[in-house]
Image (cartoon, rainbow, N blue to C red):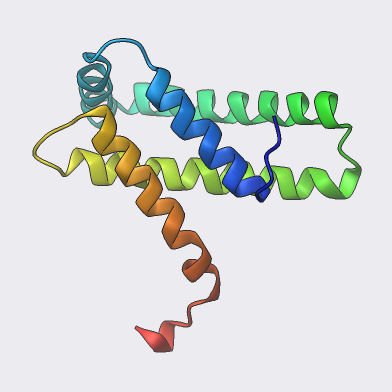
Length: 128
């Protein structure tokens, strides 16, 4: 359901809510093992990217059905989902670099990557 925030804030909240609802504490360990396997196995990694593409298309279709997106809104929805996926992938990479791998730790990494998006869109390389 849409919230009072921006599309990206709503998508972030959906992602964080989903993470919190994942069953069992061993979930984090399964994510860790699957990411390690994908890193060593290009075909599994490719399958994961293909899955992301299918999931994104499905999410766009869901948004179109539920909210009747006009044509120009589809671009924003797609970019919002692309940012969500990019931020999540970076959050997982940050999470994998940590010594402990917990659901709360992953949620913290997700929040950190999302917090960086506004500055990323406006920062000039000269400011580094």
